[in-house]
Image 1 (cartoon, rainbow, N blue to C red):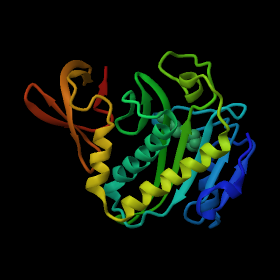
Image 2: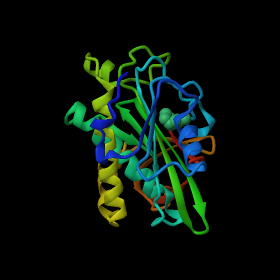
Image 3: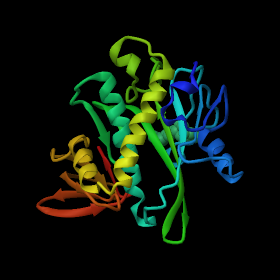
Image 4: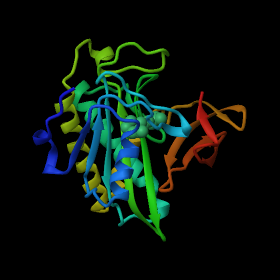
Length: 252
Ligand SMILES: O=C(O)CCCC[C@@H]1SC[C@@H]2NC(=O)N[C@@H]21
């Protein structure tokens, strides 16, 4: 994969590693050494010990996929507003994919921040926030997007290439992703929280569609009716709205 730093947005620091364990870990290392300014991006074509959500791994081989981490200093956010950051990043990732795939109602964000096409995952986000008292001090925004990989061991994953039948040049895709991220980040920094929430609900997987969930080991029917500023999911179950955190509910 060739990524040309000069094509990247606003000229921020861009670190390209042919291979590494985890771009999030590398970005954390730069932060620890006071060598990361806002927007600093670490990308790799080959990630061998990538960190995923819930302790899962996220690896990338042979330059097939986009695997990068961006450092931000969202000190304007309270510790309790971490979901707002996750929502803005998820929207940026959706903007990025929508520009490539065109208008596609199947392209959705699955709560809280996975990118899906139909029932297939196209990408994921892992944000590592450091707090300073009541505020966020810095964030490492890690993003993994399936681009040119066409073989997956599971039917629940896909990629841009698998969907469109063509191969992509990763450099321009990375540059475009950084633009999308910066746009949504600036929107968040400008306090446009209502607009971000409306945009998120518009593309939220199964929003206001009755379907099955698993709650505490039980199958229940309900529909998502909202998402709180703290990221909890509001689900109408039998006419009563209940709020769920990440570990408390899952789509069936
Ligand atoms: O599990 C998920 O859905 C989120 C995966 C996020 C993976 C990305 S790849 C780039 C960055 N570096 C990491 O180690 N993890 C994130």
